[in-house]
Length: 274
Ligand code: HPA
Image (tube, rainbow, N blue to C red; front, side, top):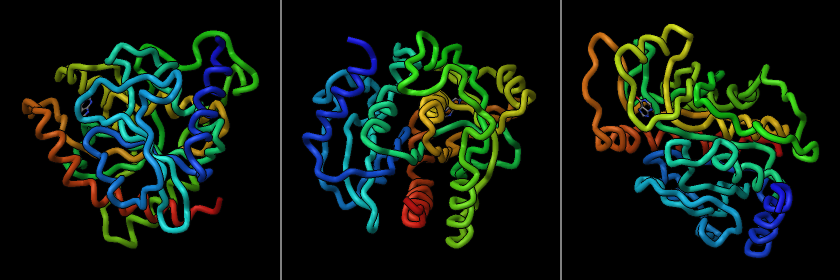
């Protein structure tokens, strides 16, 4: 079966299970599953049930599609995402974004945990992604291009919507949340970086480094969706004072910042004109 038909099959299945038709979707990253407790949940579908959906292998990622509402607006929440380091291709990682678009989603909010390399950033800070660098060594658009999904050479002059960045900044400001704004570089992982790698990544213009988000953003832009990226800085990656990072610390920082992230997402969604 070709990819277009797989996308349609997955979308049709979800449509058969869900009454709402959200225009907004949120992808939750490492340790950020709690946003769901802020939703009024209408239905939940395990990823395994959705035809052709990949299955999440990381323990801190749950693996279900939640349909709920934030205020007046219906949203899809992908609780659990897929990574290159699990063995998926970038195309597979971004498959759920194809399905969301087929379901009518026009705005995609992507969250993640990342390491902060900008010396002004602190663990627990949130950064709105202004731009990205793809060092995954893969791209979800490699292979034949289906013109029904998007163009062969999509533009990347505004990967993250300026309008959504402004909404996020306004939400942060009105709630007294410090919001950084910067460049996210994606690497395959799964190991964290060496000191020399952090130095290199900082030098090429990145403020934070992580192992996700970029495949989903590229596919969303390929289809003309608006993207907002929000990163939680879970560890400080300063090469001259580098401390070992433990997964517990990453999850703890994500938990610390989560209420702030939730506030920003809630306000952005409420203020969206869709
Ligand atoms: N590097 C890459 N990915 C990450 C990091 C990091 O330091 N912290 C959380 N995700």
